[in-house]
Image (tube, rainbow, N blue to C red; front, side):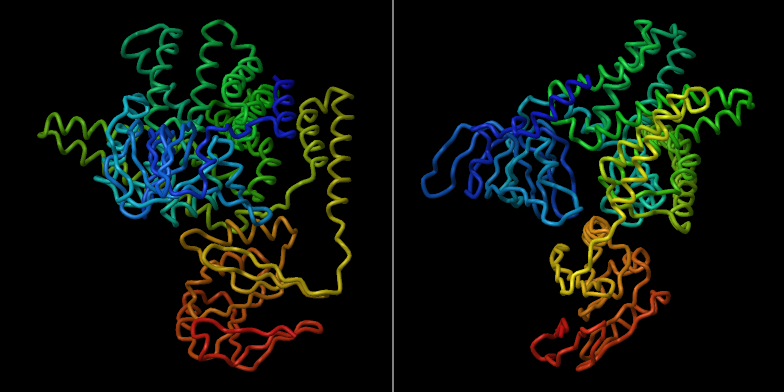
Length: 616
């Protein structure tokens, strides 16, 4: 298995893996085309349209030659505006639009969207409107995925019927893995508390489904242990289809299937073999899955628990059952955090210390949420069949409401606890090597000289790497200006000798938080932890609404508002954010740093929405 992974990495390094085939739609990039294809993924509904993956069948150039071509490949389709209704997996669509290449990664430290799509064998995009999208009906493909999608839509509609928007968002995430991307408050508190993973259907959901199925089969139908466990595979894959067969839940389904089969074949003592077989079953049909961050995190976590937990479990066996349960939960949470730390630092550049405590309470509650969600759906089915029992679904809805209010309140508490998250610079490969060497050896440090030597070597690598990365470059006697694309506008990073960097116009937090998605990852990649000042030239505070999160994270720098006239909007904003001290700078005034200064230029008639600055 290890040799196969190295072989895949070798092929990828030399560009021999994942080359674009000659019949891929990406060879028509830049042309306006008419294409037909089959929807092969659950539609991703958004406030202004939807996104889906299309397996292209035919393509024709729109004008002037109307040339036709034979293609076979995937296109990521963005339908803007009011999307056509009832688009399901397996439907055949006719679409008119211009094919585009994904935007290359422009900013170091940020998410590489092109590489993400490439791992999914998607090499081009098509943006179109609802009028240019025609649903030609079912193609009789993806029938199982279509069945699961329809069940999922009905489940979510039940939640929206009996719960408010916040509660429906959370329970939809707990039950069917619908991510709260378009509910800023819910998304923020679950990220800040380190519990966002419970809103993504994954291994914990599958384990709960197996547990419930097993208990029902044992106590209601009196099946033997092995038969009950074997039949749970049906429940697992039905749940995978209902969730949408996304990568996390599909991996969990494969891993649980291999684990159950190993138990049925009396091979449960060969956990590493089962884990390798599960990985191989995913990598053989799609080798590029190896470079998927979710795949790496899933298998590193599973390996860490298999390796760590049996070795530390004897330390807790003398405790009473309730205390033993708490310590095992703490050990599992801590193990997952420890083994994922380097990947988290490399990919997300962020660590949530509070998650070590929040998950101890939130994880068990998430299992209750899965049961509560399916219970509410079950009561709705009972009410539909027997209308006189409608009081049951109302009562169940109230209980689910109380549960969700408790869960949201708990997550809110942890999210607003001081020091919930830390931005981390990407570690050097030698630091990662030393870190994992310590994890491998620390369990035997009390009994084995070899383990002690391994820990010492690992710590040495980590210390040397930290010292090497901690060396700062020699400051240059020049000013550096770096434009940062934050969406519809740009921010400017101003680096002046003998002074901390200055950020001009931090960007908005709508439709996404430009601070967390772009600016902070970039500054973390550059190892910039503090700013001298944040300078703002916009008259509208909404255009720089990511200011509070940047101010808290980057050492609470001075905030300077440069305005020619007015300022009423900023005065109102200041009342809503009294903790952020602000200085207003008017026409012809200037800021002095070292041998440089920024001056506010008197050009109010030409520039009504922004202020111009002169650096001298």
